[in-house]
Length: 239
Image 1 (cartoon, rainbow, N blue to C red):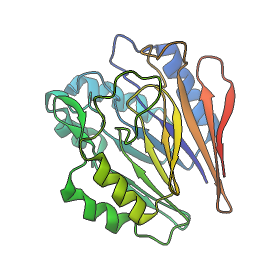
Image 2 (cartoon, rainbow, N blue to C red):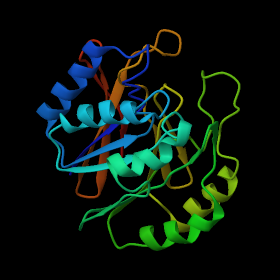
Image 3 (cartoon, rainbow, N blue to C red):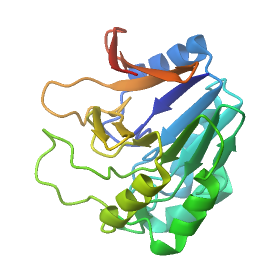
Image 4 (cartoon, rainbow, N blue to C red):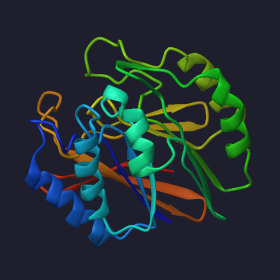
């Protein structure tokens, strides 16, 4: 199974680069994944007109199955309500014989900090207590600090409890965004994969816009990072 993981589009931000946005659409359509995952911050301030612009952008990506969760920028200005009208549930779920993937909203309206909420822990447990070979949790905020991104101040306030739940469930992969810098951690048996920004100039240092491609075959996963600026691919994980 092929999955594309894109994050932090910011299509209505002054930092958005239309050329990069068009490249992402072209490359994802060429890759032709079975599933597209977007881990938030599609907009800049969550306004209705911004959601409409983001929806038109996402609709140009020719993938039937999409899991999209909001980011902190999307949750601004009652954007979390508009998000559901435009993109559907903030808690999307996908399952087939190979994968079970559950997306959760980790945002707090008009605050950049993250919060999953204990009222959702049992729902996560129910969704991801599955016989699928690969079980993944998807959210906007990172649960483990990312090197090179400055002082840590926006990690979910309940990240410790969520990490404990992930360990108990023995999940395979957690996908996130938010920090605009790609990174992979392994904690216990779980890979924590953070995607960089794919279309924004708000980059860390001399990093580049990017997105990730996950290839799942015969119980193994390979993750390649695609540099949007120059088209080069780099393997970041192979099990």
